[in-house]
Image (cartoon, rainbow, N blue to C red; front, side, top):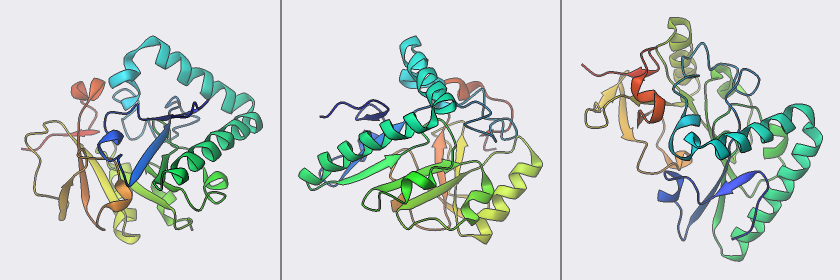
Length: 228
């Protein structure tokens, strides 16, 4: 497989579940700070973020994410140039194998990447977002957004539900116990979101059930949901 400077391919335990003869997923991991993930504090997910789960707990991984994030902040044009080289390379790799390229640019961030997405119509992009009004924007058809639910703030919770209902967006909910997932939540059917990460294949108007990993297992902010 090709070497990439910014994106990673085949190194995420969840996305590889959906990879195969039909799809191949690449992810960009950055730091979930206030600049790159502006709603992380109000949503209560800053501490329990997946940034520290899996390979993210290793120092070398954190250092790499720090370097990439610093480059984006200080040298945004250079960062975008390298990212486009990675995406070109990944797209060609998939095309040679007749596989649909799939890219998640916000692995552990929440940035608006529209300027990139519109230039790659043959790549299927997707993200989870806590920027609830982002689903109201006019996005290209190759981009799928899933809203990230949290009860850490009543304002945030209500806005996510409001925008999800108004714009027919799905909501991802992190449950504490993977063995105690409800059949419905907020009057929506619940589907398994951990069997793969191909969110653009999900049916409309559902809750995507995820379960707490890493530091999220100890979360008490309301980001992780307990089912009574």
